[in-house]
Amino acid sequence: MSVGLITSPACALHDMGEGHPERPARLDAIQDQLLASGMDFVLQHFDAPRATRAQLELVHDPDYVESIFARAPSEGTEILDPDTSMCPDSLEAALRAAGAAVSAVDRVMAGEVQSAFCAVRPPGHHAERDRAMGFCLFNNIAIAAAHARHHHGLERVAIVDFDVHHGNGTEDFVRDEQGYLLCSSFQHPFYPFSGTGDLPPHIVNTPLEPGAGGAELRRAVEEQWLPALEAFRPQMLFISAGFDGHIEDEMSQLRFVEEDYRWVTDTVRQLAERHAGGRIVSTLEGGYALSALGRSVVAHLKGLMGG
Image 1 (tube, rainbow, N blue to C red):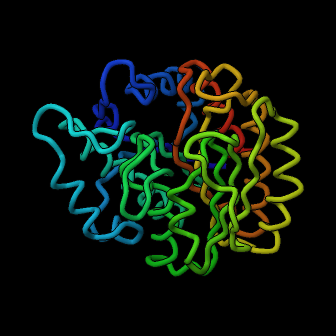
Image 2: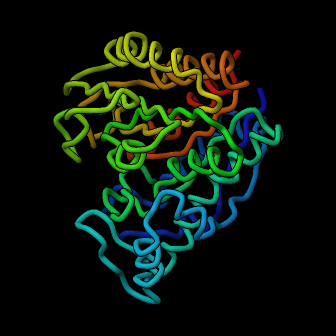
């Protein structure tokens, strides 16, 4: 199956300072593994455009979007929250990251590729309607899903999120919206300490205890995600692909390996083939152990390709 890779050099310029785990080297690590594995040569490559304000405002409050533009520094650093800051290149990176996800939807819907992975930063799934947090400025995956609904007229879109941290921003967006299903796994208790309260039926959260590994993830997907997804019959599927649950990643206490990421991706792909014509858009979220990140992305792309 044809898979697109969408990225931008601008995404490597976003820099939140020495020692910050969400660092430019993450994209270098992915590219290195794509080349070493031979995967780079079988992907279709596309440059990410900038997202427009109208696209950002499908998810974010206009005043919030304006505040991010207004606070973008011409020099130095602008602190947005204790974990999240902007350098002079951050706004451009964030616009390209969101734009990559929107472009991925358009290319998949046009049939240029069957699915697409956006190798971008900053990540997005912690960004709420009116708040930057957890390394995230704009909610890339929610913007893409909303674009599929509003621009392409899809009635049912599903988002799956397997980052080690709960995607509170994505949940914040879909909670009161129609036409979305969100299935999410994350370590609990863990930052941002959300995702376990009362939930509407279209949000299926599967918190995992510290020390959980592939067996627990597979059980959650098979017993909770798949029945909900089969009943929902999504017309397009979106993935918040976080690789910080890898056993080598010191960010968490989960114990996933590359084959777990390939399995969950392959499982989701097969469901997308049954209900959505195979249409999938995936965006990079977490993953901070560089070698493990690169290997896990390769496994994820193999799952998108199938076979």
